[in-house]
Image (cartoon, rainbow, N blue to C red; front, side):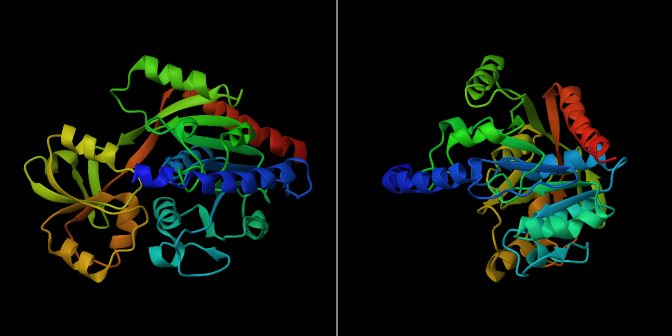
Length: 338
């Protein structure tokens, strides 16, 4: 597979020319970016999928929701509907996308909407919001967010990647200069301190902005619509682990470290399960999946023994600095308006 992708390098050079020209036109204001009279925070990346955008959006919700009316805007990847749509807990993942549905289910008092056109989405959300969080909009340059958070994973940083289609980069590494903060995500617990510091040092070559380090924190319980069980519930049981995310390795490692025994059914990110696959999953005695996959499976499988393992973003250090940066940005924005 790696060899095949290397053969696509000439197409990556063409892709680079197109995306670099587009970014240059926005930088020179030949193409217009629209700014807004309320705080807009963008969470995005330079690569395709799997950097932890949803957990970061949820972190920001928890940080801001008690003091501000927060709205989340996503495109609703792979949804069957079109245009602007407010997300409700009664929706299905097919209608609004798994990640927006996950956020609305966890935070029902937060306004969540989907719209491929971020300008249209923001204009409709403005009357309902004091802060808008844009999910996966770093390359959506028609919108000029007030604060850009760029995520990159520890195991596959954008520094070591190539442009599509030979690699997974959506644009050149120089795009990192647009970020107001870079967050290294998914740092494993056994990561060498020197390796983490080296990555931070290398990132500073691309952006002289604050760099933060985070990891995935797994809950000590599994959940579903009926309730929850402690993680210890799994230790004496054989179960099936179903994953349809970009990188399930941290979850696999975590469950293995907990002494769990499981059969793995691994699917691509945002996988659309076929009827045969759903029937196979339904026949399993006990199924554990990710929260995002649970959003897609819960309406398609009538099964009580279907659980997900919640996760959260957890800062390795400097969490207070990050929170202060975000809160200062939001407060300063509103102080200017008032």
